[in-house]
Image (cartoon, rainbow, N blue to C red; front, side, top):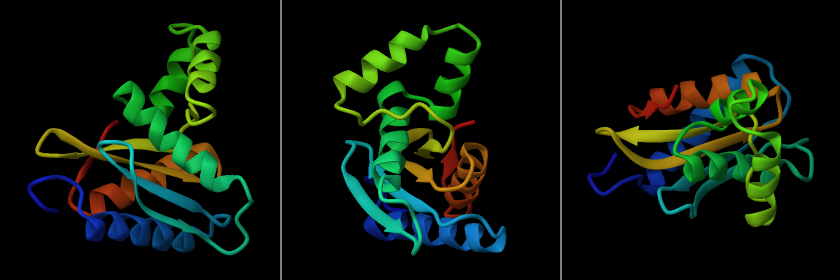
Length: 146
């Protein structure tokens, strides 16, 4: 981890750890996108056998976390519990040209209480995507949002 934010090596390590976790848990092929705090793609991997749209979904989950300031799973819960109207998610997705996927698996990456990026994972169940993301972030000595 560098003092300015998320380095390329940090982002690649998060991807690598996510892939290792997926194989240990025998999950379906995953696609992982790591964005810096400005929303720029920093690292990406798509396992053999991943669906053709998984990259867009993974990046959209990470964008949702960055855009809202909390995990894409938390956003999904707020909609499910009628705290936020479903139409709000539809409108945001339209405004971002499909780059907002409010399903679990998109998490903020924190260093010293500052958001330095986000990771989005797609391929397994949304809950499994989220668990792998948390584990990968933490194994690289960052903090994941809840």
